[in-house]
Image 1 (cartoon, rainbow, N blue to C red):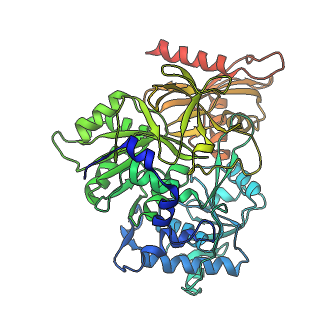
Image 2: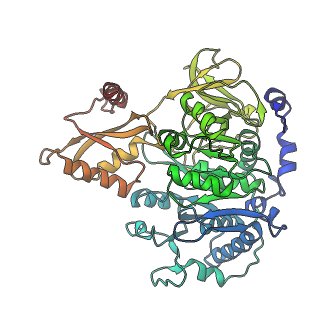
Image 3: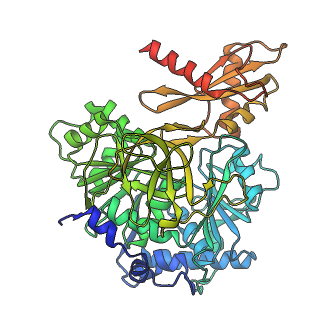
Amino acid sequence: MSTEAYSAFYARFNPEQLAAEVLQGSLDTGLNVCVEICDKWASDPDRVALYYEGVERPAQALTFAQLQTSAARFANYLKSQGIGKGDRVSALLPRCPELLIVILGTLRAGAVYQPLFTAFGSGAIAYRFERADTRLVVTDSANRSKLDGVKDCPTILRVTEEGAATHEDADFHAQLQQQSDQFEPVMIAGDDPFLQMFTSGTVGKAKGVAVPARALLSFYVYMKYALDLRPEDKFWNVADPGWAYGLYYAVTGPLLLGHATHFNEHGFTPDTTYEMIRKYGITNLAAAPTAYRLLMVNDHLLPEGESMGLRVASSAGEPLNPEVVSWVKRRLGCPVMDQYGQTETGMTCCNHHALEHLERAGSMGYSMPGHRVVALNGAYEEIEAGETGQLAVDVQSSPLFFFDGYTWGEKDPFQGRYYLTGDVVISHGDGSFSFSGRDDDIITTAGYRVGPADVESTLLEHPAVAESGVVGKPDPQRGAIIKAYVVIKPMYDADDSLKQSLQTLVRERLSTHAFPREVEFVTELPKTPSGKIQRFILRNRAREEFDQAI
């Protein structure tokens, strides 16, 4: 398949025509997302929607038709509970078939799906439930205990092993079996939400992001032109659906194109990754840079000369360095493209596999069709080639841009016609950009974005902590690790036992990916005259520590 020139395609891109071609319903008169990503393809009884590789359970394949039936049953269960249009329904589940059934059934009922990452602690879960007024949560036995510490927990529906009864919660499969497999999809408008996300901030708790149905068009463009997902591809996005990249582009995106997705319940290791690629003949792979770095570090596990059969690979979450790009080409036998986006916006700036344009090592690429991405100086003016500025989206010139602001007005990220990403980039003058850094304190560790305020507030729950400052410290494998500088109260001892106690607290209350791998006790934190912690000083200190250790 020949590639079209990016510039020509971008210039003639027509969002109205795209909507007419892609959507069965209408953004104006109504649609149902479950219909768009499942029912539309269910007329072929053999068309597979999900290939599942389990840990305890055998591998399984589910068709669109099977998922349509199960989604209808779950939607009927929601209706029986008085849950419907606009209500938030959540899942605390691993990558398993039931997770996909919950997502699809929620969307069929016109409700809003709210993801939860299984590594979240009770504090992070409770906050999201309270903020979103969540009506129902579906979990399994392995994750059920995380809900014990959640005050005012919504109704719990539990996925149990076959024959394993539970007297505490309603049983997922038993409840679905009692329901009809027919459910008329509830229609929503293009501006109505279908996903309720949360994204980390530098001040306060995570901010709400309600994703409207019109985001489907943006998802489609990313899948088709950046990832170059073709009908003959075997597609695997390694990202967890508990996060935006996984939910947008490992679930919604491929199913929207009528394409099967893959769930691997095993934890990410080089061995499980290669086994998955071999078993399912994966040709189109998407993952965070951390995954590629981990494969590269364990290069010895890939036999010399083995062809993995990959056609293309893509990366998102943080910049790819040239060494990883070279390794993927040499050892995995395919090009890897770097692409950029946020929870708020989806992907907006990409190197496109399906469109021909100049590629620069380390560059995040060009505006995704339907978007106009620019870089601004301190006066919010668009900058020239070679200059550094804040990456922004020109909302007025971006018909597929779908973010309208944080759900509960937690912050205003707009400046005139621009949405400000908070990321600093270098402009190459030809519409492409390279990432330079953040203009705030957000930490990207192993592809996860962590707000230091979340970690700091969790640390303050410990009786020994007077105050803390949390920053990212460079790390060759994870990109960065979380480091906490902690001031403790006089009656406590600054020892290893206290460090471990603080790390455990963050793991259990916040999440396992957000705990500080390093804790350093200090007598005071650098502050502004008004008392605000100067994290940039701590960041510089952590970087110096890293440089000295090399």
